Length: 93
Length: 469
Image 1: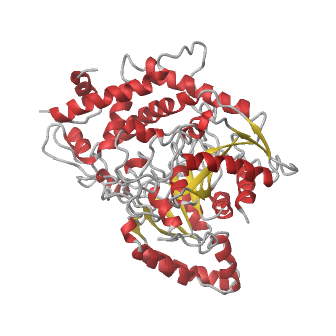
Image 2: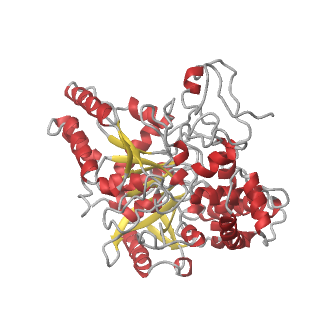
Image 3: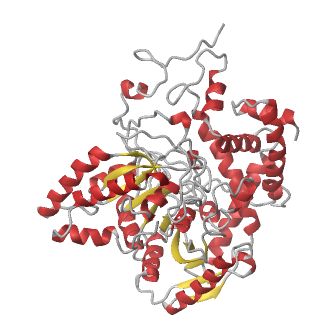
C-alpha cells in the first residue's frame, strides 16, 4: 500500500486529498486494511457467499401506474436548475 | 443531570390522557421546554414547534371524544436520516445541510396515521457512521449524565432525547449497533428488529443489507406499542416482510436463554462483566432456563461488518454528486463532483468511502468483499445452530460504559466498541438493549438479548417481563 494506491482509490471515490492528508491516510489505511484483512487468509472454500439474510431473490410487482413526484418536487432541492432540468457545469469542451 | 424517573412512559401518559388527568398539549409544551432547557446536550438538529402545538390540541379533542388512535399524543423524535416532509433532513452532514424532503418515510406515515406527534429530528454521527455521535456537522451530542462523555452512536441524539425526557419515544437506525449501544450508554431501552420487519422506505441508505430502523423508549412496553404500529410489509421496500410470529410460543412456560463464556467477554470492563453475571442470576430468578452456549467466530464479526458496511456505503453514497440535491461546491470547477464530495463529507465518512472503494476495487474484490459474504454466512449459521437449543442469547451491549469525548481517536479501536452489536445486523436477527445497573461512576450499563430471525414479538414480551418491577 503506497501513497499512489491511496491517490488512485481517492480518484475512484471522487474525493481529493492534499499530499499531507494522503501521507497520513496511507499509514492509517495500512493499519485498517491489516485489521479487516484478517479474514482474507481464512480458507472458506465451498462456503456460498451470503448476499442477503432474507434469502429473497427477485421481488416483483404488477406494473401498475401510481403516484410519483412531480418535476417541480424532483427539482425542488437542485443546487441549480432551470424550468425542467438540472443544470450542471459544462462537460464537453 | 439526574435522569428522570423511568416510569414516566407513554403507556402511563396514555392512561392519564384518556382519563382527563393530563393533557397532550401540556405534555407537548413540557417536552418543548425541556428541549430548550437542555439544548447544550445538542440532541436535536430541528424542532417542530408549530405543527407539534396545534396537533397536540387535536389529540386532546380526540381523547375527549373517545376517538383516540393507538399512539394518540405520543411525542416522537426521529433520527435526522428519516424523511419527514416539513423538516429538513441533513444526516448531520454538510452535504445535505439544506435538503428539504419531498416525501414521508413509511414509518412516518404510519406514526402520523396512529396519532403520533413528531417533535423533531435528532443529531447523529454523519450518515450514521460512528459510535459516539461526535462526528456531526452540527457538533457533538453530549451524554446527559456527564456532558464530558459521549452518548454513544450513531443515534446519540435520539438516545439523549428519550433519556432526558424531551419526548416519549425516538426512532433511530441500527446498522451495526447504532440504536442499542447509545441506548446502553444513556440508560434507556433500544430495540433493533429483525431485518425486514420495519420498512426502510424514507430511511437514508448507509449499508442497505444491514440497516434497520430501531426504537428508543423508556420502557419495553412503549417500544412494543410503537413497533406494532410501524412494522409490517411495505410495497415501497421489497426487503420488508409481513411475518408475525406472535402465536408461536404463547404456551411456553419458561424461556431458554444462552450465556457465553468468560473468555467471550474478557475485553469488557470489570463493571460490565459483573453486570453480565448478575444478569444471569436475574434471569434465573425470573424463571428463565439458563444454559451455556458458544458462538465460535467472534473474531470475524468486526472485519466482516466493516468490509460489508463500507462497501455498501461507498456505493450508496455515490449519489451525493452535487447534481440533483445537496450542497454543490465550486460550480466553475472542471470536476464539480469531486469538489462537492471533498467539501461536503466529513472525515469519518470519507474514510469509510475510501475503504469501501478499496475493498470493491478490481483485484481486491475476491480477497475482501466475497470473503466477507462467506464469513457472513458462517456467522448466520452459527446463530441458527444456537437458536435450535435456546430462545435467546444474552450478552453485554457494549464492552464499556460511556467513554469521554475525544478519548478514542483510533478508528479501529472505535469500531471495536461495536463488537457485541454488529453480529445481530450481520445475521439479520432481532436484538434489544436493556438498562441493567450502573458502574461505580453511576454510568448506565446495557445488557443485550438477541433472538432468532423474526422472533421480535417474543423477544419484546420476554424483555418486558424482565425489567418490570
